[in-house]
Amino acid sequence: MAHQHRIHRSEPIRTTSWVPSCWKRISHCLLSTARLHIIARVTGKSVSRQSYGRIHIENRGPYRQKSGNKPEDNKQGPDSNSTRQQEAKPLVQSLNPGSRNTTYNAWGHSRTTSGHRTRTHSLGASSRMFSYQDYTVGWICALAIELAAAKGMLDEVHTDLPARKFDDNTYILGRIGSHNIVITCLPAGRYGAITAATVATRMLLTFQSIRFGLMVGIGGGVPIGDIRLGDIVVGMPTPQSGGVLQCDAYFERTSTLNKPPVVLLNAVSKIKAQHIMNGNRIPQILADMLTAYPLMRSSTKPAEPDKLFHADYEHKNPPGSCSECDERHLIARPPRNSNTPRIHYGPIASANQVVKSGILRDHLARRLGNLCFEMEAAGLMDNFPCLVIRGISDYADSHKNDHWQGYAAATAAAYAKELLSVIPPEEVENELLVSELYSRL
Ligand SMILES: [Zn+2]
Image 1: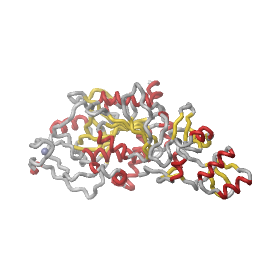
Image 2: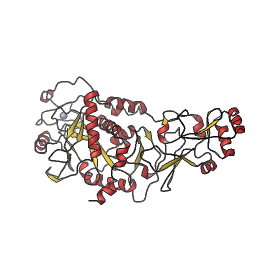
Image 3: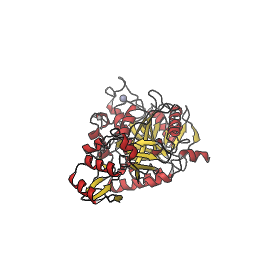
């Protein structure tokens, strides 16, 4: 995980400027970067030394960075020399796909064409500040464990932006691959489609460059097609549905919801092909997250066995544990020869109440044709073009407990990360803004 950054000082330089020969000699003698900045100040040029006699201007845009940091970067931090910050001229057009209109100066500050000034903190730190307009992908989850898994997927965590008066959401900002991501979570203890819709609306008002979203979290699986705990269900359209089936309190379908945006459907096709050829990268992504956040042991595969009881066998006491349930009622399933979770594509049923009955689950699944039950997605699909990704944490029966929730939240988040990795940033930029999309309806 690239939570630290290192400037490539040997990177090719876009802009080269020559200075008088006397300054060449001086620069040859004064090797330290700090001294070169003194030269820069005297000459009026923002410089660093690349080779003898030649002064280069470094590109310090976000995609020139990799892991690690050099101490001198901190010395040049934006808080250490405000005079230089004012003097330095914008030099390099950002390579950041999420901020086409942003320029970076030699000190790592950026300025958008809208005039909103942002800053990248000392480049070695894991925090950087962008503007609201720099974020193109919204990620919504419902539970704290889902939020933790989402943050664990970030390659880089950005500094928070100031809160806005109309927006009660809290956000985690960062980058996955070449995409700037804004993550938010439903308020604690509040679930369901209406809450999700409210949270999404606030996010879109604050981050108006968002092109699409991901709804990522846990769900109750329908045990057909060998769906098991920790597997992932992705809400994909069918001829009869848009991928998410909105249900009322009686689990009757109430309306037809929009499909996920084409850019995400294309990405699903691409990642499906990759998985057929090479398998998925979810175990590796989870291992990377655990390396970066060793305390997130709840995201590892639990020791509790994956038990699937016959639909008509009810759970016995105690609550939250099947220790008293009769294993003679278990459905025999062949063990898998791999710990790699599988990914299933199909409709997801979204209702404002939890399904906790095997008989009801099977009855509904036969009628709806869904692979999974959840509670929030129906609030998003018609207002926020997004893809729903659910890690299976239970079988929507009376044996439901939370033992697998952490792992299921993590596998869903890892799939989302892998999906984003196959989406070129240009495709995101080419998508309509959500606000534009709905103004045309
Ligand atoms: Zn049980």
